[in-house]
Each structure stands twice: as C-alpha cells, then as structure tokens.
Amino acid sequence: MNRIAVMTSGGDCPGMNAAIRSVVRTGIANGLEVFGIEQGYKGLMENRIKLLESKDVANMIQRGGTFLKSARSLEFKTDEGQQMAVGNLEANGIEGLVVIGGDGSLTGARILHEKFGIKVVGLPGSIDNDIYGTSISIGVDTALNTICRAVDMINETASSHDRTFLIEVMGRNCGYLALMSAIASGAEAVIIPEVKYNIESIINKIKVRYVEGKSRSVVIVAEGAGSAYDIGKAFQLIGGFDTRITVLGHLQRGGAPSVFDRTLATRLGSAAVKGLIEGRTGVMAGLGNREISFTPLSEVLTKKRDLDETMLKIAEELSL
Ligand code: ATP
Image 1 (cartoon, rainbow, N blue to C red):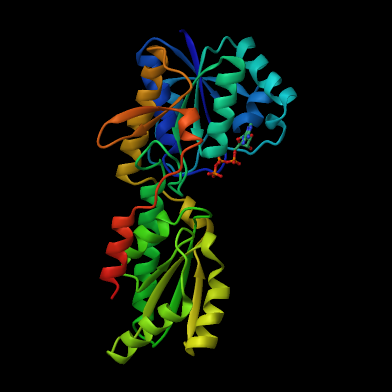
Image 2 (tube, rainbow, N blue to C red):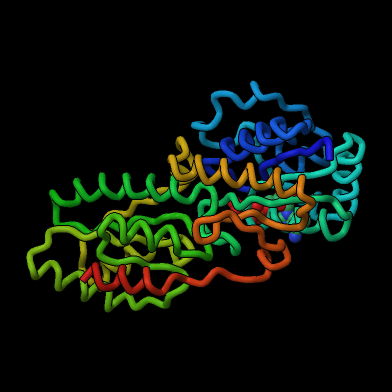
C-alpha cells in the first residue's frame, strides 16, 4: 500500500482535526502518501483530493471542527454517485481510506467496502455517543465538558432565584450526553429518549425539594425526548413553577477538543493507518476497555448501544 486518504463526513465534532493529523503523520512515518478529501463524500465525488504533508497538519491538534470540512451528500447515496467516488479514488491511486464520522458516514464506508472492495477503516466521530463498537466516540468528552460548564453557570444564576431551569442538550436517539451531564452537574432530573418519563412525578420530586428548602432546580432534557420549551410549559401549568429554558444547540459541537478527545483521536487515527497497512478493511477502530479494538462495520451498523443502566440508577439515586 502506497497511498491512503482521509476524510471527515456528516456532523463535525471536536477532535476531528486531531484524528486527521494522526492519520497524516502516522501514514508519512510509515512510508505512505496521505491525501485529504475535502467535504466528505461530496468532495470525493467532485475529486477535491489533495496530498497532505506533515506541515499541513501542524498547529491543528487543538483546533475544533475539521479543516478538511464536512458535508452531507444525497448524491452519494445513489449508485451513480458512488461510482463517481470510486472512480476518483482509483484515478488518484488511493488504495486505502479512513472515514471519520457518525453512523451515516460509516454506512457510506461500508458500501465502499462491501460493494466496491475499497479498503476502508472507519473512526467514530459524533458527540451523541450513539455508535456501537466503541465505549466513547471522538467529540463526546469535549461536548460533555462544554455542557457541564454551561450548566454550572446556569446553576449559579439559578441559585439567586426560586426558578426551575430546563436545559436542552443534543441527542436525538441517545440520551448519553444528557445522562452524563446530569450526573456531572448535579441536576435534579434528566429526561432522555430511552426512558419513558412521568412529568407529574418529576414535578412532585422537585416540589419536595423546594419544601425542604432548596431554592432552584435544574432539569436536563435530551432533544430526542421532547422540546425543553414544551416540557417547560407543562412544568408551569402542572407544577406552577417559574421556569427558564436554555437550548444549548450548536455550541456543544464547537470548541477546542479536550485532552481526552485529542488523545483518543490520536490513538484511533494511528490504529486506522496501521490497520490498513496490516490489511484490515470494512472495520471501525474504537476504544474497548482500555485498548483500541476493531469491529466489523456490518456489526457497528446493525447493533445498538445499550443504555448504561448503572449510570441511570446513579443519576436517580443522587438526585434525590
Ligand atoms: P451525525 O452523527 O452528525 O449525523 P453522520 O455521519 O451520521 O453524522 P449523516 O448525514 O447521516 O451524518 O451521513 C453523512 C453522509 O454519509 C451523508 O450525507 C451521505 O453522503 C453518507 N451516507 C449516509 N447514509 C448513507 C447511506 N445509507 N448510503 C450511502 N451513503 C450514506
């Protein structure tokens, strides 16, 4: 293998630049030429492919986002689009590909591998932590730190008034960010898509806290469980609470990656290149217990991550 390429696709997340840097420098250190594909599958179809040198990834590990840019492409879902993408890989003599992204991006990688025989290794990049085959994805730790900083600040102002704050965080199908940030910020309640919630019992629990002398409460809501605005209205109507809503939105995706994300992305990028050199393909590199492991993309994309029941129990018990 002489030439490999790397791209970022789907939603961006902090740590993608660190992963690209690791792929580029590991590749060069192992005698490969490494190409960067701009704007994910869109750029691959448009042949936006350039040779990257070591200096191109200098001063990059601490930067959020992705300097290769990311994109979503409907055209790549068609056979015609995929043929264009494969044609460009072949025209550039690229023999191995590293795809960094979420489930959709890894689905594209699986197609390149299964349908066209392209050698591909995926890396999990998504702040939701909804990807099977890794205990944690690139970007999750930074997003959690960002959320907790925001909740801490809201807690300070909340303490000055008798108010209930509802804070909506990202997570369409997966309540990981909400659950972990609720535990780490000491929130009174968490509402996530995986668990049916009873608004009256949450309201009653918070009322008991107020009677006991607590002056404020914070409820973290995962976006997939419902809009914090709607849930906040129910808090007002049913509980008579003075509520304030904060939707954290895209700030959760931004910012400099945490030390954990920088090192995770670096380890995964290095493993992806070494995996390609050793002949691995159709797999995703992820973090197992403490070691990097490879899981077939067919498994990554058909199995679901289980909700961590222990953490759920901890959240319930500690918010009493
Ligand atoms: P995020 O977790 O942020 O949503 P993602 O990687 O899941 O990231 P998607 O928009 O779902 O983001 O997918 C990114 C791109 O991957 C799509 O725009 C498309 O080009 C490609 N892709 C997604 N699903 C498929 C599919 N079924 N077949 C081929 N390509 C796909």
